[in-house]
Structure formats: C-alpha cells, structure tokens
Image (tube, rainbow, N blue to C red; front, top):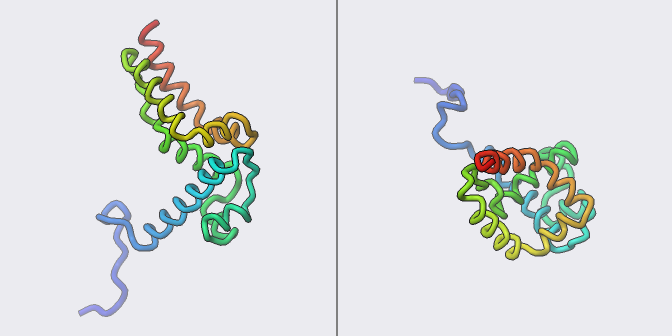
Length: 147
C-alpha cells in the first residue's frame, strides 16, 4: 500500500484538464473578454493594464502572468475577436467566398463598436495585424482556385 504522492502522468495520458489548468484557462478568458468588451465599449481604445485588471477583476500581475507583454496580449485578443466574429471560418473553396462575405458583414453589423474600434484606432490596427497573414493566406487559396 502506497501513501506517497500519486505518480505524475504524462499530459497526453490525462483525460481531462486539471483544476489548475481549468482555472488558468478561465482567468485567461476573463482577461481576453474584458479586453474585447473594453474595446467594443470605448471605441477609442487606449490600452491600460490597470483598467483591464479592474474590468477582469484580477490583478495587474495576473495579467502579466498570462500575457508577458503587449504583443502576446494583442495576439491572443486577435484570436478571440476572430472567434467572436467568425473569421476562422473563412473558406478555401471559391464558390463559398460570396456567401462568406455576406455572413461576415452580418457579423460586423452585430458588433459595430468593436469593428469601428478595430478600424479606427492604433491598438485596433495592432490587433488586426496579428491575424492578417492567416486571413490573407486562407482568402488567397480560395481566390487562386478561381484564377
């Protein structure tokens, strides 16, 4: 009979995330959602770690624990905005491009403040630039098939 600590299993052998991993992901999502909401609300977005911490109800130190610098935070936010708007669903087949454009514009209409903030602010431009290469590559695949 062993009373010592349970031997660690490899991460791939685990069936579900640990409590700590779930909490880490939940905190990360709270921070990203607070940042996206701030951008959508304020329009003219000027990033402040203190304001973000207040909105996410975490400490500034917690923000930097999850996102060590501004580029890491903006890259994660870019992915989060793309998830909300549906930019990860871009087709690579030419016949689906027109309908995708219509769907994206409907999504843009659902998030007007967020879209305007991304288009008109410096920070919004930085967020958009993080996902630009992937969006261009996916769109180019569909257009290349037509050309």
